[in-house]
Image 1: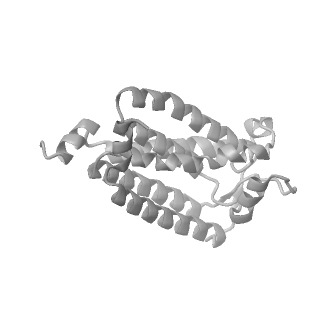
Image 2: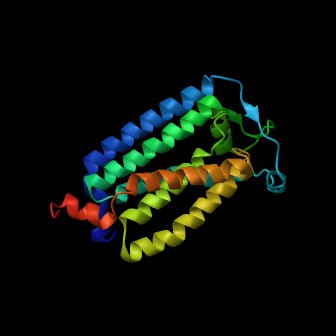
Image 3: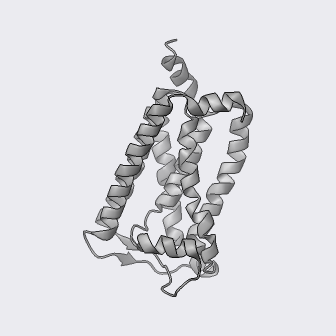
Length: 217
């Protein structure tokens, strides 16, 4: 691993570890509480032509679950100011997503037939069909990609700006192929992730934040 990348990842690592743990605990507590103890019965959407065109393929669960490999992109942050902004946007994603799940729960179109795919069986064992709209998979994937682009520069940023949109698109397809989501769940999820990032970073550029963190302003 290049030294500059290693230094970036290790910068403020105790704070990154504590912040990541806290956000994960709060997210899981809220998500599963709303999923297993819904406030009102869940709605089911009508399948669109896109939903019908994408065949059920449980093997895509590996790509679907790869969203959890994008969340550690927050470790690319170099300063505490960047980490605060990341946390601010992440909390906004949770608040809006959870509010939607509370007020208007939507059940995804998951098939009920037995599937001989270990990871898929694990998924359906802990995750119900609720909490479908908007897709938090797409919101968090989009938010993570935007964060990585905002806090990096040079060749690393160029590579990430090519790789991450493709990865997010594959996750989007996987949400449909595994029948975890409807097509209409995806655009609101992407929009939520992008808006949360914009809101968290809107008042200052990345360069300004780095100068402020170093005491130059």
